[in-house]
Amino acid sequence: MFVFGELLCSIAMLMSMIFKMVYFILVVRMLLSWVNPDPYNQIVQAIYRITEPILAPFRRIIPPMGMIDISPIVVFLLLSFIEKFVVGILLQLSSRMG
Image 1 (tube, rainbow, N blue to C red):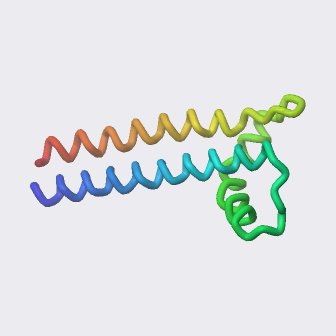
Image 2 (cartoon, one colour):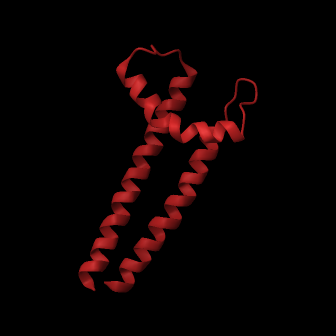
């Protein structure tokens, strides 16, 4: 059981790191929305390709209010909840097995 507990702990830590990377990319995307980036820049295109599938469903539900798009805030809150819930459960399970 010890090995399975350590495996669950490792999976939880990996998921937490992935969530942190998604948070960072979303922040960069929000900062890019305030400036006028070159749409042909490969880094900008990569950021848009990564974040658009996450943001698009929320934009359909919550349309932008004038110049303000609150969908990234909703995505942050939802991702934060999911991270705390899933990672927390995995860490609890790993501590009970370890």
